[in-house]
Image (cartoon, rainbow, N blue to C red; front, side, top):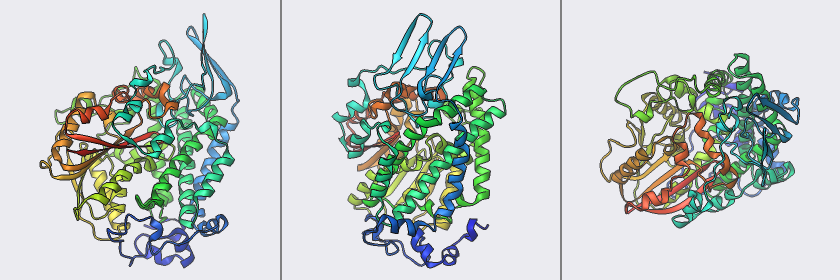
Length: 571
């Protein structure tokens, strides 16, 4: 089907574009072979289609202009839906009869948790006393959905929980006993977005751009950021219209997005992409293939359909989240195939993991939660993976991804490392089918060379039908926070079984206590989005868990925004 701006599907799309557009967007030439193993780890600038040398900021902007019309729609949507935020008052005060009154200074907080993470004071006024949480301001994560969803009217004692785990017992602190800290882990430890002004961020973006590829990267990802923020606001407004969210709740979200949100959340997003772009420049992985305007996400019909499904789903989630006592969290199917812990509607999403509807909108929903940066955070996994690829002696190393979900991350892995022999496992048949469709779409439209076929396996992480010592590398992304403690250990035992001696295990998941001090106080509140094992996850010491088995050696730790990545070697 035709794509926007007259670009049709298939290789012919590149030929339809004028030469200057191909240079600005760096679309792959259909006849261009994929770089060899010896060159694919080099920075993408070494590609024959990439301009070489340093370019001025003005030149980069000029070369990127061919991409800007594509992103203008996203920015326009952002403006429309954020205008409402600025109509809200800078101060918001409301009460819960018979319980307490919460006063929000500069409208930075809602219902006891903040959508933005940084530097604002919150006073909880109880009839007999005043409790102030103000050392540097109550801080919480911009990346968890619960940060905007803690409902005051459902609070039993206080509207939010503040974690008081001693510093010395936090996993982020204990990680130093086991892992070498990458620069990213050191950077994010004490990063406070509120300390940066817009001019500082603009200067950082300018400094990071040395050619048109970098300018296109920023145009695309800032557009994604604006689009998913706008989608989130639209979902909240629609939920109110449907009676699934009270008007004051909507006002609080919009007020939270006024000023403080627009100042702090973009800071976090931009730093996330600065790290992502740095790793791309270092040759750890390729530029994201979905930046290509031939991708279906640029088709207005595809975009509108997916967005509308996500808005409807967000309305349903808010209804359940705002009325947790009335929400049905059971899945529609009852059988003994799935573990008990799996038969839940995680995140309050309709059908949990067990429907095609859920699989179709999962990526869109999580990008709303993470403000359009989930892909960038997941790609942190590729940093230690690129090191594994540099060091392996296997021509086609066998790689297993556990709980691959929709398979979107797997396509980024194959795009940067097409020679790997990849197996994708997923317990949900619906998500596994979506993963197969996602991989097929990448192969048919963006694969640059012949690549070994990807195998798809339906299995729980505790029992994978793969031979002993058969895998060179095993990866998991966002799995362990949804497992109860005993299941986490069962998965680790299975990883040890299938990995070859000397093989690599890469664990990527949510940050834990001590990884980013600014998020610690209310990080555990994500549990309220029907994540029952998240509080135990953020206190789990994975360095100790794996090394005490005597089967693993802890290697390195990376952090990017709300995501951490740990690497291990199988002994």
